[in-house]
Image (tube, rainbow, N blue to C red):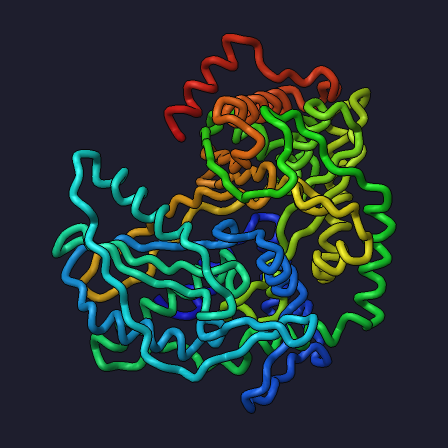
Length: 497
């Protein structure tokens, strides 16, 4: 696969509401020459961290964010694997991406990052233990135990690749990293680059990867230097005005909120019926908005019903990669954006949808200000038991793109179980085609039981079904589920879980 092909796949994997915007910016429509990012000298002195990295460092220093901020991506490899070539390719990967050689330390009160010189990276190979259960269950249990091992950000780079050997011809390649050096987009970049570097090592030919001009530390320094710019001041003024007086979302929970979040989590999933998915797309077209906007509006209706509040804030994500040079870089770029709506149950859903459309457009016009700077400016009441400003997130992702090609191997994407939750609730919709939409709910197990999570997913599916068929219904009359409907959808959730 060529680099342009990989770029297209990465864009296609973005939340749908960001794809066209990023394509325009990558084409040069949103980038000014004065925004060219300078490179820092690499003279051995500590390098600055980004504002997002600073927050994760501080959480770690407070004893929070152990395995909660670990992420992993995996490929299932079938065929004759050359582990020597793979090990050499991993070393090449760390040479290419400085973040994979980065540790963090305190310089007075502030964290800094230190980049080690390139060097060999041993490939750890783990044999899948024998057992009576299915291979998938044993593999997932092993993956979960490995991914939940915390990183020590001071002692070693928070990057841990390993290979699980199912048999002589079947392996699972895993790259695990702390969120302080990566995000979901980055994991795809790393797997694509690793496949190209493996091919190069195996064949002796060039990898075809362009040499990067920038590394993430350059971006971090550039980002911090822009904090006092007029553009950032305008963004900050918008967020201070928009989020003034925002109270935490008080969801009904199965047990009291702990004083300190553990980050423990689980997931459940269900598939929306094809006719519902078609109806949601039709509604979006009729109102000149995206499917994502319809999903946000429906979710905010459900949250208003749950909390009894009309003031509902939901988080979402921006890619943070609005310049072409950032597209193939590993690092913590993703930014949280807050969508705050006033839910009036007396109005028809269609009118509320039009309001949410404006909210989404306005919010993404101001996406460039790092979320952590918004939090610092607004100074919400400190509460280690919940995330600041938003306690729930909603994203829409495209279905997984093709796995990167590796010579002589059949390569498939493999979903790694997480066992963690970054928010009270995260709703991720996966767009699998015109009539296929999967809803996965990630929930904090400190707060919610599995049955409650499945019920929440069922209620959201019911609201979506109602707006797909009768979008002019008043918000107050949008149904959740009767007992029989809830039983059926919960059973589906258990089957898909």
